Image 1 (tube, rainbow, N blue to C red):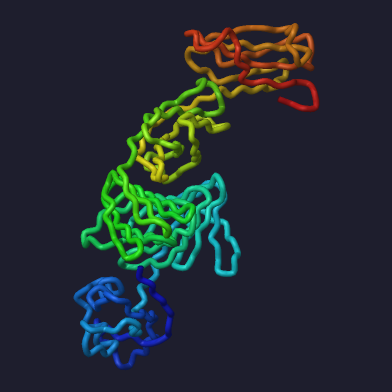
Image 2: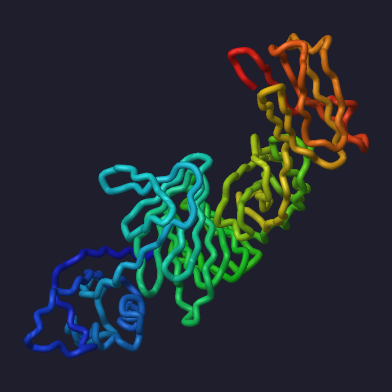
Length: 422
């Protein structure tokens, strides 16, 4: 594993690319000190720092290197700093921070820029998407923490301290690693691909969904192509496996529940399952995320709307497999009571194949309701001349095709006329 130490210096670094007017005073250029590592060449350093491998003679001249093919490890080279290119927060849900050197946490917001040296951290049930300078999109789920180590012409380096990230990287014409992910145990070099990286329990887990990644671990580099996964840790060599197939995603439960139940088909060899909800088909805007050993996963209190749902399974190594994605419409029943001048107006969400029953009672047991009416097609009713203005109410539903027992489910309730309003 290569280790580099960088230091900003106020020195002049002449590249000879343009001639400066003698009468013009220029500010010293920023540069970095790079200590030569075994295997380093001016060709590769020039490609990384100057964006052009053929410009290596400039590095040779600036550092007065007489034998460029015989540089000794530990030799200090002056290299130009790449102009900083900022990443941008493209989505945030929940609580996430930019953590400064002194430990201060600044709440992240959409549109905020992330510079080299910044730390991004997400809390529980929180998600952040970053758009990087070369078109990469990186998504951080809950309880994840990354350090932006470098951003420049030739790519971005991220250090995953804990948690998980998912990245979509556009193809690069020069075949260079535009994104590099480092963990405490491995380095993942990325060109054009879609992949996931997780660091948990001192192990690095990689799933390649499209393209190819290069995983470096203890001096060994292996290719992880699409459809494959890998696990590396300090205690064991790299283990690879084919990704588990995607489970089928289906909406389950009752169609009127506020909770959203997702049923995944069982996958042979799976030890756990994973479901995510998002507003966009590319899952840049994740809003819910759950894992469970059961293929049935329930999200509580999900508002009405369209959701993209994707599900996957984990194997015994902890490697996450392929994903199935579906677009669903979640329509929980919403009911309300409005007091009007001459009565009460009830309104509820109408769902096909469901019948509704509205009950009003003077006590909470509903043993003797003074109103008990059913509705097949309407979305509400206005009631006048009730015997009392202090009453309990509840809305029940029944399936017209036998899905539910006769008005067995209470979907909304409340009390009118007391201190506590419905």
